[in-house]
Length: 111
Length: 114
Image (cartoon, rainbow over all chains, first blue to last red; front, top):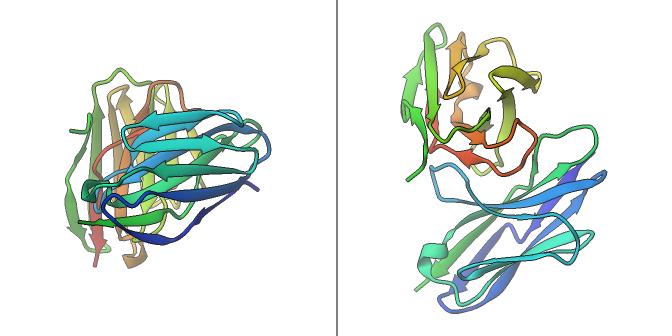
C-alpha cells in the first residue's frame, strides 16, 4: 500500500527565515511525486511534479527536490503570503493510479 | 482565478433532501474528478471520469451519484445524506485521461448536512 508522511505537521516561521518541509513516501514504483499548496477554504493549487531521484524544480521562493525515499520543499526567505498548507502526493505506476496524499504541513509565516 | 468553477459555494441540506453540486471547466481537459475533504485532512478521491466515462469509483456510497453530461461538465447528485457527509467537495480536471497527478482544482462546495 502506498504511503505518504509529511513533517512537520505545522511550522511557524518569521518572514525571511528559510526552512524545509519533508515528504517521506513508500510506493510500488513511482510514477510521480506532486506538491500542492492549499489556502484555507480553497482547493489545492498544483505546484510541482517530480519524476525521478535527483530531480529539482523551482518556482519563486520554492524549490522541490526528490530522493528515492523522500522529497523536500525548500522555502527561501518566505513572506507572509506563503502561509498555506502544503500537500505532497504520490502516484504509483502499478495498480492503483489515483494519488495518495499526505496529511500536509501547515505553514505560517509571520511578518 | 481558478479555471474550474464549482457551484454552489455553500450548501445546507437536510437528510431527506436531494441536491446537486456542479462543476465546469473550459480548458479542454479530458478527465474530471470529485474529491471529498474533511477539515485538516487531505483530499479523498471519490470518482474519476475519463473521456466522459466513469473510470474510477472509490467504493463511494450510492447516496452520491456522479454524472458527466459532456467533457466540460461534471455533476454530483446528493440524496439521503448523513451528517458525517458534511465536508468540502472539490472538483478537479486534468489534461490527460485520468492517470496524472497534475490536477486543477476548483474552490470547492462546502456542504453541511443537518
